[in-house]
Image 1 (cartoon, helix red, strand yellow):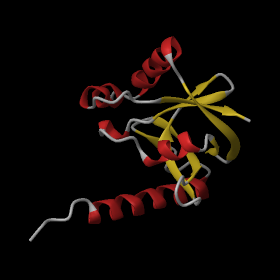
Image 2: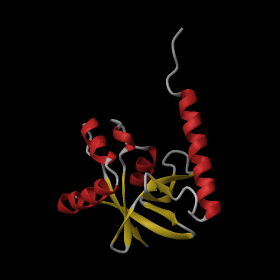
Image 3: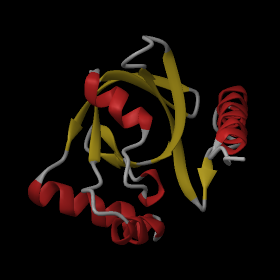
Image 4: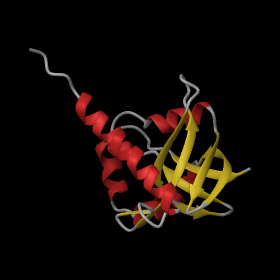
Length: 146
């Protein structure tokens, strides 16, 4: 009998993320607002195929008048779905604590990318390991306020 990959694991992960988002929203980020000591924001994108809203918690750092996030997907060879949605429709929203902001996503490049990557990797050491684990260039995204 062929083994199905990921079905139950994906369902568990989705349920866990939904719960984390619910707790973050209800507590204004006081609960579920940090991961491994790093601050989390809630990013809400529009599904590129479904048109539905999707919200995920992500580590971030301030960057000018916006914020920087990393589309690492744990070093997977595939980009995270939220990044594919954001790349397709760069206008989205974030929640930080109890505050919500309309944003436009811009991919950092060159020296700016390297500087922002270093800041994020200094905050969370896992990013450098993820970069070694995959052959894809992991996007560094700046969320600019609209």
